[in-house]
Picture (tube, helix red, strand yellow):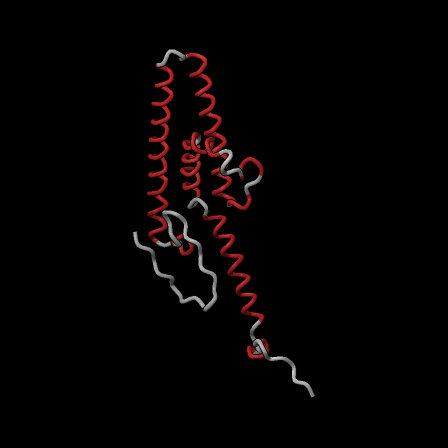
Length: 175
């Protein structure tokens, strides 16, 4: 899938949009590639969710077949369900608001790494649901890009008039 070139040349110093995985920068102009990817990505995410759920099912069935089936099996199912819910909530917030907005237990990367791995099904399902709404992470990147573009335009508007008056090394003349 190729990316569409930017329709108009950007002025020097204009902010560039950040690419999104699977979408590149097609989310800015929302061209035909964007629409195609908006159909393909949720299907891929749903297939990945099903595959991860199958792997977890096989793991839980392996424990169930062992001699410690009763209580341990219940604990394992509860742990997988809780980890999937926590991981799904974190992923949804991450895709909707960005990494900077994660606080508390959601911001933990290393200490809760096992929870995020065990809860991979929840994260994949959140990715699937988010991709039905928009490209995952698009809202955060669009907000940051619009802020950067507005700030760039304000800086450019402040330079109109006498551009050489603000050049470095050009102070006021002394009489």
